Amino acid sequence: MPQLSRLAGPKVTLIYFSGLDRDPWRGECLVRIPREPHVLNSLASGRRLALRLLLWQLVAAMIVGLAFSVRGYRWAIAAVAGAVIVALGNWLLSVRLFSQVNNAGFALARLLTGMILKWIVIVGGLIMIMFQYKLPPLAAITGLVAAYAVNLLAFRFKG
Image 1 (cartoon, rainbow, N blue to C red):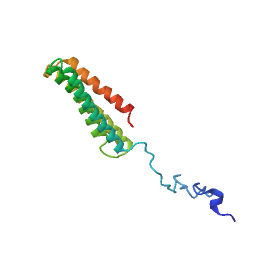
Image 2: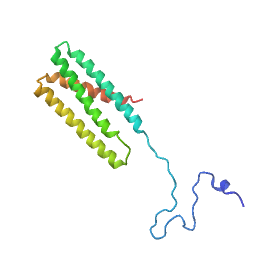
Image 3: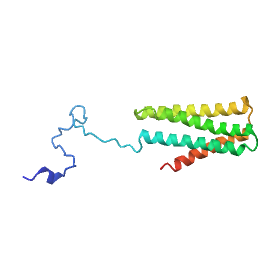
Image 4: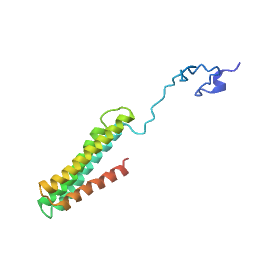
């Protein structure tokens, strides 16, 4: 009689002809095959990308602030504040999203609550910049757009 490894090979799952791999009353599988997790990215790579995004957004805030400093210090503060509130919102999102490992339902809930926190910070920050501190809105919105441009570039070149 030939050996089993010659017939089936080393990595082939054997077929049970007598049906002993299933519970006859419930129909569930009795043989548990351990599987490797198929994950494209780990939490560590997401944290690194979020940190890199945050640092680039703060660099963009400084560049926009320097560009608007020729108009005056209020314009520069508004531009820096517009970009910093986007960076702060993204930081809150990343802290909420990459906090722990759970199942997909909890990950989706953390993503949604992080997005809500992010938009509360951004809209509240813009309201404070424009209405409470009476800073120039053009500079604040330009800083916001510059920070979001960095956001798009960071996800495009994430290598």
